[in-house]
Length: 371
Image (cartoon, rainbow, N blue to C red; front, side, top):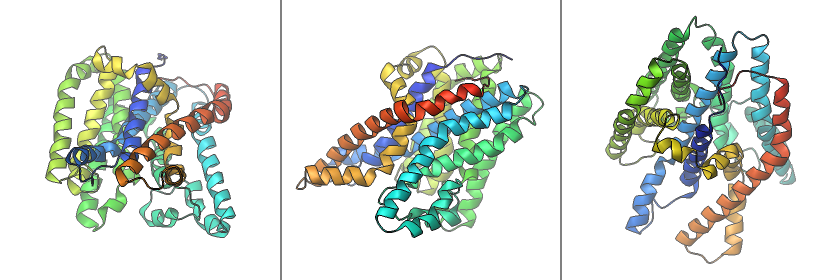
């Protein structure tokens, strides 16, 4: 077993991913009467794909850890403890804050009857997602669906991956899961009238995590990895072209149309997979991914992701208080600035003073890491 060193370029890609997601939620512009702003707004609609990049990076990370550590005594408990110490403190801390605000609003019982969905990471299941929408608080939790997808994947994936005899079989497993996810979306689109309610379901999004896992296996293959690096530029061009064609056909880059659901999602998945390969190679993409500002943002990206939606109503209230007579475009711009500054500041404070003490405890649960 070879223990790989930290890969700084992946931190930069995390920073890029959270920028995509933030701009998606705060960019606006798609309904602006200004033609230029409206054009930019239509491209902003593709910001949902930042979560796809997060999934690919997560699959790369966790699969590398699992594969490198699978024969180490106690690797399973160490893996899960390290994941829990990274995800749980801020996640459950946010849920506590939401519950407290619900109590203050006199909706404590309503919150108790619904917040259990989040406590169990079930908020991405269609039959429960509606129940999870209103937890009696003015704070928002709808973006936590992606954390549910990851936690569910963490629960199942180690069992499947460690059943593979060698790296070739592991790669076939990853590609099989990707194809299964694509097929699942086709079945859902064909058989369910409101197929978008499944857009956040584990089986719908498992393909993105599986492609990240496939890259992790290829990264450990001295023959295949150079081939991937050689193919990455062409793959990026073809896949982003497919993504854009799907958007043009559906008249939107949003995931809500079937063209994006069936074609655009796998297209952007391959594009970001190629981007990861290029970031881990020598060249322009790698240099950009290693920019210190992006890497710093990637280091606190979890907090930015949590806070930028959790406090969405608070940021809106601040803007309306600061500029009560601002027109729509000015309000959007101010909201973008206020939310960007405060989300980043809160994420930095959280990382340094709240999350870091928990992260330091991970040294007690050592595993072989790739990133």
